Every structure is written in C-alpha cells, then in structure tokens.
Amino acid sequence: MHTIFPKWSTPILESVASIGLLFFLFLVGLELDLNSIRRSGRRAVAIAVTGISLTFTLGVGVAFVFRKTVDGADKVGFPQYVVFMGVALSITAFPVLARVLAELKLLTTRVGETAMAAAALNDVAAWISLALAVALAGNGGDGPRKSPLISIWVLLSGVVFVAFMMVAIKPAMKWLARQCSDQTYISLTIFGVLVAGFVTDLIGIHAIFGAFVFGLAIPKGGDFEGRLMERIEDFVSCLLLPLYFASSGLKTDVAKLNGGEAWGLLALVIMAASAGKIIGTFAVAMMCMIPARESMTLGVLMNTKGLVELIVLNIGREKKAYNQLGRVSVRPATAISPLATMHEDICHVAEEKKVSMIILPFHKQWVIRKIDGEDEVEVCGHGWRGVNQRVLKEAPCSVAVLVDRGYGGGALGPTATQNVCVLFFGGPDDGEALELGGRMAEHPAVKVAVMRFMEKDGVKEDQKEHDEGALEEFTSRWEGRMELIEKLGTNIADEVLAIGRSGDYNLIIVGKGWCPSTMAVAQPDRQAEHPELGPIGDLLASSGQGIASSVLVVQQHVASHAKEHISSAV
Image 1 (cartoon, rainbow, N blue to C red):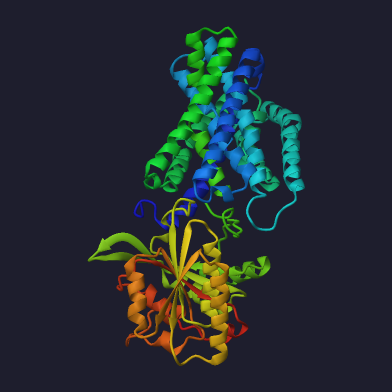
Image 2: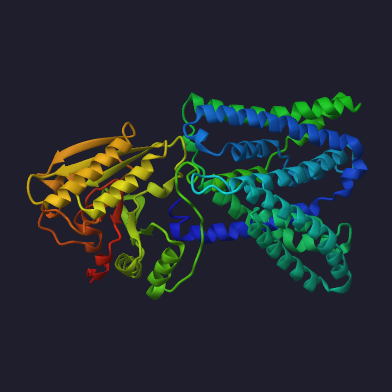
C-alpha cells in the first residue's frame, strides 16, 4: 500500500476523487427523468415509499442495536446517527439499476419502467434525507453547541436552492442549449456543476447535493443531453470514479471485523437492508395486482446496491471516527505555501483561529518494510525539518511533533483500542503532555498510562510542588480511566528505550523539556540527532533504536520560548 499509494499522494488522490464524485452525481441527476414518475402512476410511488419507509425503520432499529453494542457509539449525536444509518440502508442505487435493466433488455418492459420510476423517487428522497443528515451532523460533537435554528436555516436554504435551480436555472439551460455551440454549452455545464457544488457546501449541505440537483435541472430529451453524456460519462466512470473506490478502500480495514459479535452485526446490517427492500416491495406490488413473479423481480431490483451507499457511508465517516467522540473540533483545509515561508502561514492561521495546539508531521516517515531487521526510513527532506524548527520557535501556541511509525495507518474507531503512554519527568512541557493525555482519555477506545520518573534531588522546590499538583489533579479527574506507574530515576535512557521497543503502546507522549531535570538529560554519551525534539524526544525519534511506538513530542507555549535558539541540521 505504501508503495502504490505513498502518504504524499493521499491529498491529490482524494481531491481528484472528490471532483469525480461531483460529476458522477451530476450524471445521476442527468439520467433521472422526474416525468417518468408521473407516467408510472401510483404503483411506482407506493413501491418507493414503502421500500424506503420499511428499510429506514429497520435502519433505525439497527442503529439502536449498534448504540447498545459498540463501545462509544452512544456518544455520537442520536438524530444524525439514526438518519445516516436509515439513509445508508434504504437507498436504491439508481445508476446501477439503470445499467442492470439495460443489460437485461428490461428498460422498456412494465417491470423495468416501474423499477426505474420507483428508484428515481427513491433517489430524490434519499438525497433530501442525506442533506438533512448532513445539516444535523453539522450540529454534532461536544464543542460549543449551535442553535437548532442553524439546522432549520440550512434546510430552508437548501429548499430555496432547489427552487431556484428548477425555476431559474432549468429554463436558462434550455435557452443556452438552443443558442450555444456544443463546446460552449458543455463548458458552461461543467462550470455549473462546480458552482452548484460550491453553493451547497457553503450552505452547509454536502457539495454532491448541488451537483445532483444541477443534473436534474438540465433539460431532458434533447440532443445536447446525449452529447453531454457522451463527452463526460467515460471520463468520469473510467478514470475519476475508480479513484474514489481506491480512496474508499484505503480507509477501510476489513481486519477489524473479528469475533462473532462483529460478524453478527455485519449480518444484521445486510439482512435489514435486503429484507426491508425485498419484502416491502413484494408486498406492495402484490397489493397493486402485479403478478407474484414480477413482484419478486421488482423486490430484488429495488434492492440494488452500489456506489451511492459508499458515498453515504463516507460522508457519515467524515461527519461523525473522532470529533463527536471527544472534545475535538475538526475542520479539514488545504493550503499551498513555499517551504521558506510556510511557518509564517501556519503561525498566522493558528493566531487567527486562536488554536490551542499545532501538530506537525516529523520530517522522517517509517515505512512498514523491514531492511536488516529495521523498518525503512523515508526522509521527506531537510526543508520540512526547517519548517518544523521555525514553527517551534515562532508559534503563538503550543506545538507538538508527531513521529509516525504507523499510528496513522488506520482510523481511530470506537472498537479499535489505542494504548497511549505519557512519560512524565516534570516541567511545563511535560505538564502540557499530561493535559493532552487527559484529553485522549476521554475517548472510550483509548487507554492512557502515565509513567512518572522520580528523583530525590535536582528539582527546584516550587517546580516539584507544581508537578505534584498537576499529577494529583490529573489522577483525581481520570481515576479509573488511566494507570499511574512510578519509576525511580536510575538509568533513564535504557528504561525509555525499553518502553519504546516493547510495542505495548501505539503512541508515546513526551514533553520536549525546556526545563528538564538532571535526570531527564542523563543519557549515554551520544550526539543529539534531532535536538529540536529535546533529549527524550530525540532518543525515541532516532532511527536504529528499534522503537516500535509512534511518538508525540509536546512543547508548551511560553513567551520565553521564542528567545531560545533552535539548533539547525548540518
């Protein structure tokens, strides 16, 4: 995986995949003919409504089971959790169904027309429900609570957007189809997809909803529609969409499905999604006097699943693995800066947003590929090291450097237990590391152990009292959620290396040590390889030491830090 999809390629892959997703949903809307629902009459409406309602209800039941069974699931906001689960199970993959019917030569039959009309109505209802779920998810988390009026405002803005697209943009696109050449019309259409996605994202609804509605607004039945499909479809389906599948696959860890409980939950999801569609559709079709064989065929066709379900699950994943299970506000953003001035941009954003901590990636990456018993190290370049050093020197807040040895290889899900160790020697940086460990202890899937290294002499009395107070407050606050282990400071370097080599902890948190005790700096006679990480951080981040754990080196923000000289690499 690291060879085919190196870490530096992930932002590029996801950006291109997101663009492909926008245009795929535009094509779904383009293929949908809302007039077909009226032509198919009440049967299609009854089949669609029953199939959605029954499956959505079963999805709500599955959500209740998950919240009772999976650790941490009950911490997620209830309304958005239920809506996401219901939508994921009740959707019929309209694009897949259209291709299945075309392959089987069933598009012009009564069964095909009814299935297509019901699936079209299903898709419209599903995307409206998804827009509702995204609006609700925007109010999730344990951060500052937003007013319920915000969700109402988002939904009303979405209604206004749809009305504007149908009343103003649809006639405009019909007029452009008569006035413009093919090339101009296609260019304007592509531009319109991006603008529509941007507007809905700005409103607070996912960008794909805007692309889907814009597809609905394109006039159907003309020559331009066919030529538009001909120009865009192959490029989207054959190049961009496979990248979205690859991106989804990279985020999925099937190995976490272990044990009878996990497989039982998987079987429950499949059964609820399939049974609701097939049984509900079959029952309503029989009530509409459709023969039993055709009714069963309709039930199976309406159970078609595909990319649309993956889209819903990915959106749900984005909206709820960490910021709704802890007091962490997550808002992804991408910026491009030259290395020479990147630290200025980082510090400016941190000051403008009033962030509490900047987390930087270490300039070395460990690749899971053994060479002579050691993992291979990829150096991203000394330019990145320089960025880190300048941020550590000039940041307006606390800074942490993450030495990643595979900690970021999988999502922090509610069932994946993470073991974290905080090394505490004393001083302000270690105090900040202790506070960060407490934040992590809030997550139900994180187990935190604090290793306190003690010495008899060498610590100022006021600093010792401060350290004692910090530890006492920490243990009282997280009693039962963490483990405190005390060690007498003898051979610190060997003990720290033993902890890192043991593999017992996914992550080790340590203070940089602006005010280190004599115990912390007592290491073997070796030249510092990464002095910007402090003595203990340098020891744990060095290659060739056999360290298995990832390391987070924390520097607390103090005004006097900016005066400290940061050693540069030779």
